[in-house]
Length: 296
Image (cartoon, rainbow, N blue to C red):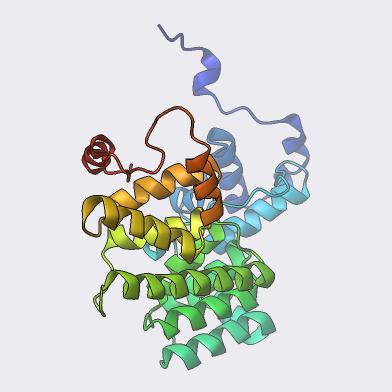
């Protein structure tokens, strides 16, 4: 049985706070209490809970960090809101200063207007400034994400925002990393195009599950097209038809075995002495593979 102690219902503050209370604003005091009540809370959630803007919360956080009360650990990102409806908009004065006085953010706005082909609204500016100000995503990365999304026909701030947050969570926080991401996506898309021709998919869009498989094979597992082509051939030889679920089972086992080339697969099959069906061509394995799905 859990035992409740008096400390569980108390907010404990370090004595060093006393030296700074007289200089602290109401927003700074509110944020102080909020963070000591819940040390794991994100800055955006804290701003929402105490009724201030993200910009005010950021300023209050900077006050206590400068006083040595808050320490932002190296390499630890702030938790970002994954939806533009989940944080408070910046006030008009803050946005106006940023739009007219920060050259980097001015560049973001120009690129957004040019690519989205529209006059930005206050909500548009606020979402973009959140990425720039709170997440600290470099302006050139935001511009690159805007151009990427618009080239895909996604010319709306909500999509751009979500894409930027997703990349932010992946650790893409510099243009060098963003360029590597683009190169990786280009390779994946090229391989998917070759796979579509191989499998006779025509021009239809991939289903969500098919896209997930392809991203995993060519992206997460880093297989070459030749390896996926070999898995396709083995699948058709064994089942008589295309089955991405079965292909995924083959590729998963190759990935777990450390196979990176067709030669690795050939050597692995040749070197199998246990009598098991390492080439995945047994009726018993086929049935188990199709039943399990291999997409857990």
